[in-house]
Length: 223
Image (cartoon, rainbow, N blue to C red; front, side, top):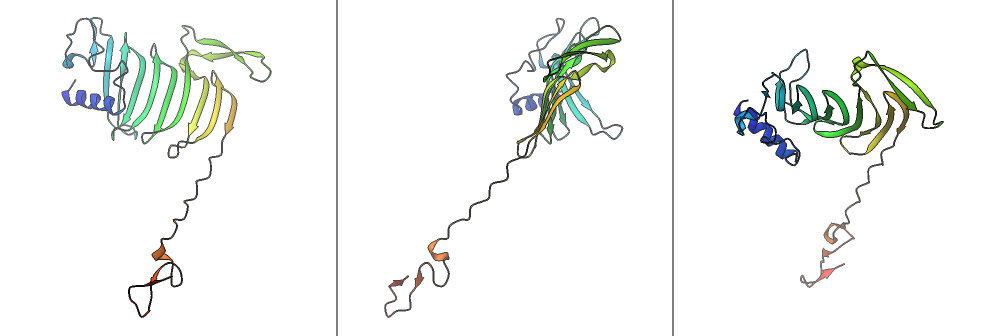
């Protein structure tokens, strides 16, 4: 791993306040490596499996913009929180993985500003299909749903969408294994009108406020 990439990773973690998470440069190591900054990133164990912290700098391809991505591997599978940033170093996403599959909370950003928080449920079946019981929130009736294991994961739970500029909640969706059970949209509050600044005495006009009077005494002020 190049030293410049290590410095960038450390800087990004500090900017995002992630130094409290188990993502520091000295936290993830394989048994055969030494505890040095040069050995803490992009390492494989004796079996050739990715372990610990990995950092990727993905070039632009097929019309998609370039991005940076980092997170931890366990036995060659993504595990825990994974972070994706644009080439301008703005957050694109924070996703949770388990055994290489999206599973848990995910956050998505527009130019570094949060616009969506949702949850995934991973599919870990060794068979071609997996079955799930879905409960209707109104009737409370259970329905068996069959999902192809190739999908890897499903939307599951509450998804919230925000205006990335104002931060206001604009929509909620509730899923059970990709089935949309409820959807609700919200009206953003009207922007507050900027109150008119009260005029100062000298801004009152010809007959308002205080003006220098044309009297025999130039020292006097006439209202």
